Image 1 (tube, rainbow, N blue to C red):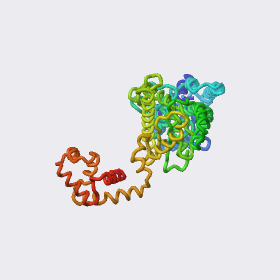
Image 2: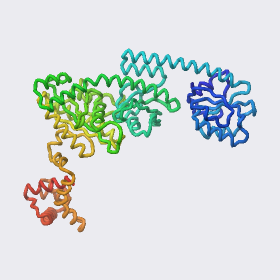
Image 3: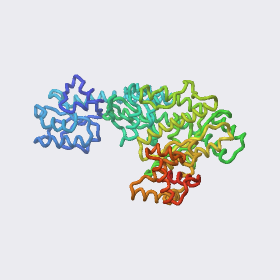
Image 4: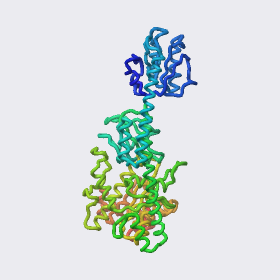
Length: 544
């Protein structure tokens, strides 16, 4: 029962003397005392009624108020029978501590207050039990998440919604709420529940289940529920129960995908791979891509390993349309490009709950689960690129909210048929390793077929030694003479060895470029007219 509801009981004629801003607090019991410090008898959440027999001097009021706050009581009701009034020092002490203080009239006994409140608290308990029975019955009957959430919200009398860690709506509705901002607040909150005050409104955030936040769901409720957090916990528990049930159903899908990946990596027969591919929901001629994911947390000592967390994050980013079983070398997911098209269409049309400018972004679809392109090859290419874009958006959001985590995702090129699966797995893994070398992010197969992959696979000390041996003389010269040999060299190579183009880009005379390049050759003993030395310099500049 809330303090506000207690004050509204006409027969008690209670008045609020302090702490009026906290009348939405709930209390679960009534305790009558005249002890100056009854802490040993209190467990928190009580309405404490006192006749003020403990007050002998003004300082006693502060000591009593401190004891009440330390015990976590919901409010204090003070009787006027002994002193005829409530002392100003008690009012001031309670006001300073944000402790609601109620005046109990002389003609109203504490027994009357206890009996009235006891009867009403019993009704609250019966209502709560009835509510629990209805919710449990809905869960037992297999009610879906949306229907279960709507029922629970209605029973608890709150307004809220569930959203992913990147701000994508899962179920429920909060019109006008900035979902991306709420997701960032959820990721960065030092503890939950967390109160958020924004121009759009006040919201209380709760965590759903025990998943890592980056792969979890947030429950956002309208208003300040910190004083009645049990309502938010109850709603979050119901959502967590349904999420657990959904996860149980996905275990079979993960096992089938894991078996398919194992057979492909072992060089299985094409016929068996094709059959297993169909079992996983991908037709023989249907384009798909392979994702490899990991999420490293360098300072973490507890929680999921990088592969498991990476797989959970991929599943969340793709709206649970795919599964990503974890393996020894990252998590792997097979994504039909029709699913990518549907995700792109949803991102373009949803606006993250219908809030303009607060959505997930992405490439617009045609509303039919397809993506634009020039024929079948164009559809596959655009679908793979659009999927990579969606993943980049999500990874960037997570990186902003959890800076200590490094999410790395590799995306293969568009594939068709079972024979291409093994190569796609290798592509995705190479791309993920390149992302890891870059401290996280999303890398596609297009990027691994360049010198970048070669540099990423070279040990750091070897790469640094190579660059240092070739470039240190130039850096030393630049430091001593305040010159620009290194910058000129880089620009010269980017201009494919064109003197005029390099001079134009650097806004210097062409003879200045010729002089600087000759100086580079003199200091390093290399010849920049040869392709071999140009390649060495190019790689050294990118290895620094």
